[in-house]
Image (cartoon, rainbow, N blue to C red; front, side, top):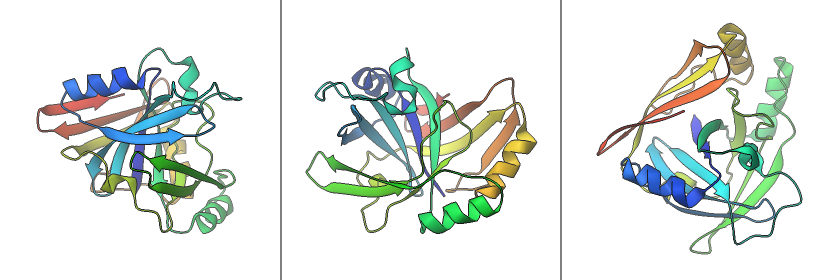
Length: 210
């Protein structure tokens, strides 16, 4: 299923305020120590959530580029998505056997604002954004972030745009996520350049992220 959508931004507070003004309320997530980032989350229903992620002014400048191309952004942008799996190592091995290498799994962790430690494993997020192929993530025994995220929104549609939709479909199939749905199917469309587009239903109306 779709684990989460990633909205990267050069200014998290400004993006959180903009989303709230459009009817999409988020809640504080936590800091990613050493990466120079922090996030805010919104539950999108069905175990899916939106992650808005940007620089964390309370951390020193990281020794490497921030993830998701954040350092090069001038505005918030939908840049990536993740698919949740139960057994990450098995999912990586299966994808490789089908002809697509999602990368080696690694461990991650962060503290929530209430001090609860979240730990997860994931394959590498995209080096170039936006990327229409998802990265894979497994939460193990950790409470899923959607359970403590701000509620009220629902993912209405999610579209992947790529110049080669057929090739994108084959790579999604290799990841065993073709047509993956968290109540919402993933559509693949032809377009001049890779892009992601999500429509999110809120009590105030529909919010489009692209």
